[in-house]
Image 1 (cartoon, rainbow, N blue to C red):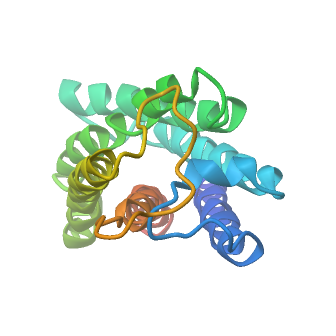
Image 2: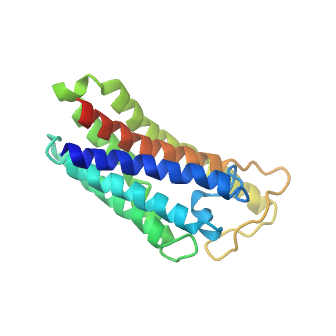
Image 3: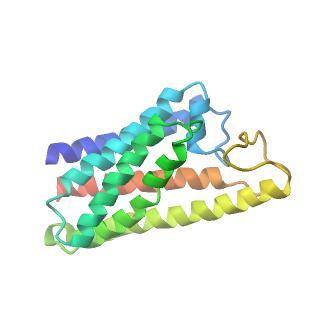
Length: 212
């Protein structure tokens, strides 16, 4: 299983590397308010697709690694959620931001990971072999749900500002081309923090598995 844990670790690192590179090769997508998925509309779609594939692979492989590590029904449920999250992340690459199923990919991949992280993390740290890393594991687990709350709040504030400024919002509306004056638009940063926190949890658990 250590080889699978290493695959999960490397996949997570590659996912973050793809995302980092996109900020340099696609500077036209302002990170303050443009979503990660929107990179698919740029010149380097393969990079954002790779990001989602690597991210999903890391989640799915880690769920296999942990199958015999968890000891409760709730933690097993967390592993199922982690698998669903991994599928959603892969679907995020298959169905890009312009596809009608991209919202489904988001629904599968994003809300499930924080719940999985909490259920799995709380169970793992009860084991003597994992307990020495309890602060790191639980810290990463809580960071996941906190990042989701922050992104939700940032999205609400930004979309409310766009609507007040008369910018059409909705699934059929074209992406906004600029931020009107007075609109607080930080959802892009929140989106990137979420992606980092989600992948960071995968990296932490895979690393602890390898080293504990």
